[in-house]
Image (cartoon, helix red, strand yellow):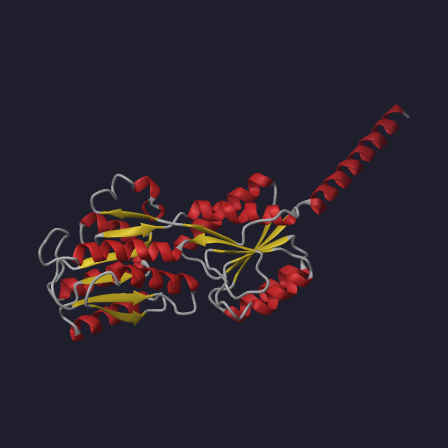
Length: 321
């Protein structure tokens, strides 16, 4: 009889533990994480998001659109159906997913856009990401300083990012605002849609038509190897400090940009703070879930490193780790 009572108590304890566990899981905050696509810098932000979510005891439900805006629209609708407590979104396209985001908003689900701003959205509660205007400005300011002593017309090649991406739009604005300080400057803007093959072809075509280009700005420093290839092929790849050097700058913080700057082929890169972006995204979502007020726009400017200090700051450059 004692053995039977002991066994009953064991079963009852186990049942209680199971109920407690189920309740705990039911009460756990669920964050929907809607990602445009996976590449090196995006993974850096995602790692920071997941680490901070784990620290706060949140569950993550991640969906990846692989660059398909319609797929992302459907994935966000699925997150709403799964009753997530908040959605963190990096959009493929600014406009395509608005319908799904508005659907989430009607359900009372807070929305945090990260890395890529959605300035025209009626659904987004907060944005966190790079200060892309400032990042572009830093590169343009440096370029203008390096070319300030040149007389006459100055041609500068700008390798644009995607024209439906707010980061690409803002980096271009910042760069052009700064480079406009040069008298008689002509900016030759070439679209790349963030594609390295297009960046290579654009650089080739630009130098063929304008062999006296004095500087190149790459909206992403992952395109700098394409610039190096073209400059080498036309015998214009000279290191920083040479009278024949073509000034090269970019924004991102990839290993491509780091290595090119370390070699002296590129002058410098603006490095984004991916870790702070990811952590802040989760903190904003947590505050919104708790009914707290947050800033709508939370921008994090990057740091500009040149050939003279980039190696000393390797620990601060995400692509060099």
